[in-house]
Amino acid sequence: MESLEGHLLIAAPELLDPNFVRSVVLMVQHNEQGALGLILNRPTSKELRQLWADVGEEPCHADGPVYLGGPVPGPIMSLHAVPDLGELEVLAGVFFAARKEHLDQLVLLTELPCKVFVGHAGWGPGQLEGELKLGGWLTVPATVHDVFHDGDDLWSRLVKRGRKPLPEILDIKRVPPDPRVN
Image (cartoon, rainbow, N blue to C red; front, side, top):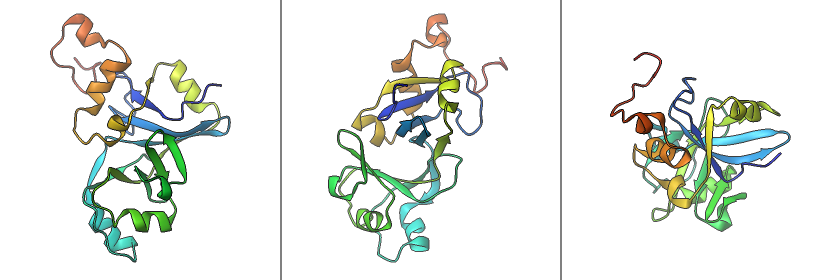
């Protein structure tokens, strides 16, 4: 098995699972025991300062939305660029943190790339490999720019990088959310 750690899973246009439609997932861990990823392009309406007022004991100076990392509940997690506050380097320049003491320090910083997530995406042993074989996901190596991109065009930009999409091949200008209903 080849690990996809540090790669992006890009939901194929045909993937209609409401948890993952048009999602981009950074693979944080992927091994024989399963996989863990964070959806990069699902900002919630909740701001980080609001979340931190509810769960933190320290003040929060950082701005930005809280992201829905996936349908699996769990601890608050972060992707950031501070080596000393990471438990894992996911790819060069991108670190993962879930420890409270690291998160407490991260929310004090205002001038660095950082995303905070509630929930995550998880797969049991062999589950992700099965979804990949069925064509549910495209994969590409992640870059720092991809991870910290905050525009709403991340999925469409990356799906083009992952493969030449059918609409482009057929010169279709707009694809509905569910291509089967056309």
